[in-house]
Length: 174
Image (cartoon, rainbow, N blue to C red; front, top):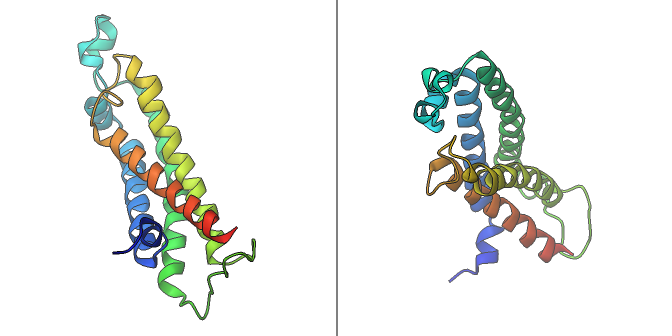
């Protein structure tokens, strides 16, 4: 049976992880950028507000939609980062783009690119998970952070997996 570290470091797992990150951030980009009213209705609790104006605009207003577009557009960079790493994994063989030898330090190889890309993706996902769990859960304005909602679960899962691969690569290489 393979160890958890060998699974985390396998090319197959990296392909799945980058694909998952790419799809997750694509979903955020599409929903926040193009489906603001739908997103507000799904994740907001405005209809249950005791404030009449807020309850009368359950899908949010133009100000909310502007902020959602901004948040959606931020995700496009993460989509691109994951897509470029995924493309390079598929395109280059080990002979063309060698993985660095353990213990050799930073050398501008695929290992270093994975560490950089997955650190960025891990921090992006972790910052959202943190906000969902420790900030938004305390309010009654959103569904996120209150249990096993899709957003909180996937932000947390991708943060843990991204950063676990980074840790495994650093542990193996240094």
